[in-house]
Length: 194
Image 1 (cartoon, rainbow, N blue to C red):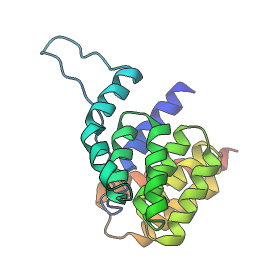
Image 2: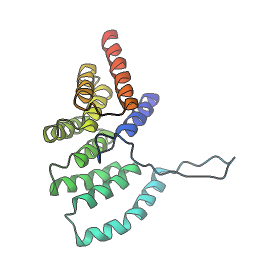
Image 3: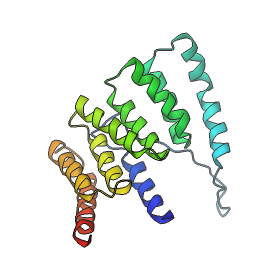
Image 4: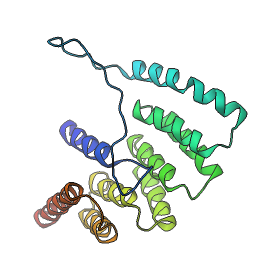
């Protein structure tokens, strides 16, 4: 189960990105570096929260004077999401959506946070709303497929979402198309073995 979660996390991290649905870039993640030959220590969740809090300080100060700044709220949410502080991130994404309900990027990021918090149904609901607002959004379609497959064990739903992604986004880079096609083949073979 841990291996599956790790693989899902890697795949989702690779494709989750709300700012530009056509590039499907992974969000930046905190990294530690160590001198050559010395293994880097992975920061704990508490360390990551402290780092995110520190990075968010100037943004939170700006937010005091402009509390309805949707891009700023989204930026703060992204800081916390990258630090695996999904509950905090979800709160900022929700505030961004309260200001700008058609912000597909914030809604897709909120969905990923909800998924990581264990609420797959709410995540799917957010992605469906994103797709009502922007039916071509590649990230929403990709994430919908991943959550349907991993959380709901719905191979058909996953394949349908990914096929829509490929059909509606012909400009997707070839390596991304190949990855989605690989996932479709994998989900299709799971369907046949059930």
